Amino acid sequence: MTIKVLTFGCRLNTYESEVMKQQATEAGLDNAILVNTCAVTSEAVRTARQQIRKAKRENPNARIIVTGCAAQTESERFASMDEVDLVLGNDDKLKSESYASVPAFGVPMAEKIRVNDIMSVRETALHLIDGLEGRARAFVQIQNGCDHRCTFCIIPFGRGNSRSVAMGPIVDQIAKLVDNGYAEVVLTGVDITSYGADLPGEPKLGSLVKSILKHVPQLERLRISSIDSIEADPDLMDCIANESRLMPHLHLSLQSGDNLILKRMKRRHNREHTIAFCRDVRALRPDMVFGADIIVGFPTETEEMFQRSLDIVEECDLTHLHVFPYSARPGTPAARMPAVRGPVIRERAARLRQVGEAALARHLQSQIGRDVQLLIERNGLARTEQFTMTEIAVGAPGDIVAARIVDATHRHLMAVGL
Image 1: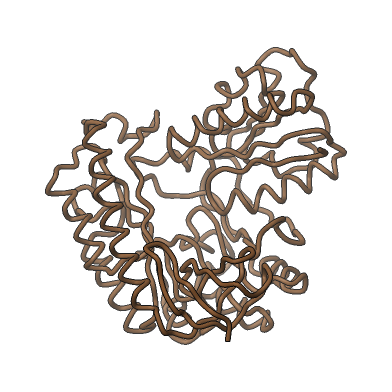
Image 2: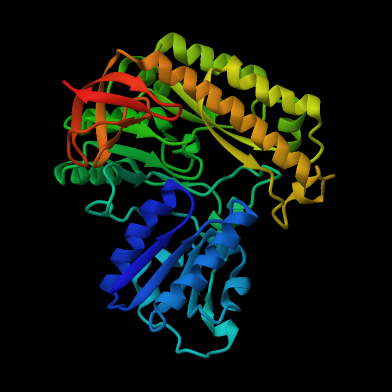
């Protein structure tokens, strides 16, 4: 082992892990494990700590460097672990010099911590990478941080305020990835629909998408990650309607179907906006499929409020649900609100997952008999343009193959090559 990376959480972390490995290698670091953590839930933090202990047991001579959002927000908690040699902040993890000197074993806890004030960071520089190891599609960071302060969310304190990458370097990065054989690229960030507000001229996400598709004509598939529908701009809607290389799958940062809960979350949309957005997008692109993040058991949520989250799955015809049982994050306003009991949260989460599974099953059945273009992720498994998992026996990872959907299980499609 030279450098191994353990990645938790979002697509942005996946991209940054590749940059971290590159920077650490350039610094001459070896026999080390880099742990890129997530702070979105308390369970994510617990899992990271558990995996750090496991990694040390399996690699007792390796140095362990912990970074990511949880390291940024809970640096002392990780530095107190005997297994950890260094804790790096989210800004420092992308700098080669951060890996040039790792403290010796047994130093005081304070000497392990190299975490700056993330709110003082004003720019995000794009680091060019050749690809992502073991990935059939590539992720490209276009933005970092968030200017909004949702009452449940700790991420702005791990990532800082919103800052965008200029269009030119993004286009150059995607062109490089395409030259290296990637057929699909995913644009990622913390709040990507806020893209450009800090750049000269304040370009929007739609302008960036148009620029990428214009200047990288050989890119076959462009996908955007989780979006805040309230910020969808006219150029983005135009791309949805007219750019076939923009994939027909949008993942909504929905969080709840109830207006009062959304207000208490300090979200900027309401249920009526979400329903109208899905309707309008489908009018432009009938094959569009929607996923959504939904939090269950947010403080003060009643059964009636929860029912509106159940209802919005059908009202928006959501297909791919990410269900999050509410997890109080210390320091957030929601952590001080009247809590819903744990058993109630778990029961509601199970019910919403059942509704989500039924919605997915309906979508799967509707695809039988259709011809699709599949991106092979690994041997035997692929994704449709709508991001639906599909079994197929042909093709190598990274290939795009023409196929016909012939059957479906309760979780994925089955296809044959054409």
